[in-house]
Amino acid sequence: MKEMNPKETSRSAAFDMWMTSPMPMVTLTKTFEIKRLISYAKKHHLKFNMLLCWCIGRAAARIEPFYMLPVNGKLFEYDKLAINVIVPNANGGINSCDIPLTDKVTDFNSDYLRMTKEVALHCKSTFTDDAMVVGTSAMVSTELDCIVNQYTDKFCNPMVMWGKYRKNWFNVSLPISFQFHHVQMDGAHASRFLRELQIEINNIRRLNI
Image (cartoon, rainbow, N blue to C red; front, side, top):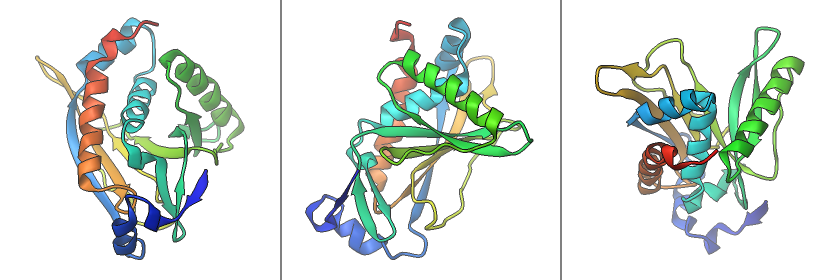
């Protein structure tokens, strides 16, 4: 991680316009077709949430602004990404767990299972300082059309959220909400991320594990 001079980055104008905005967060929602992802998870005995988180990381890794993050009036650049998941713990509460993004889904799965198990057991959150973290939150007790997170400068990281997926005779769909800080990226970058995420989901069958 290194601090950047905003004037020397592609986010210079956005930094000037949105860094001091009281509500700089933007939320976009897209409905995804996820039947292939569910089938792949069942076939290979993998957790659906883990696979979706890996696809989220893969899509984000191709969007340059994901590697920059505004924090406390400054702009930082990272050379790698991590995915944050919310973990129910042994005391009935929740904790956070930052999982490093890896190229191979098998490596990500191993880290996901090991790290979330430790967090749940010890009831202690784990965070990383050397990666730009994409937050996630899965609220699967019911179907949700859209999720809007709290608009606060206490948490500027991008956030991907979803509820329970929906089945019909032909497909399985899942509305996913994506919240981002306007200094970090514009709507065009966010829209491209959502498009790339659907591509990652569609291509999941091509993986060899």
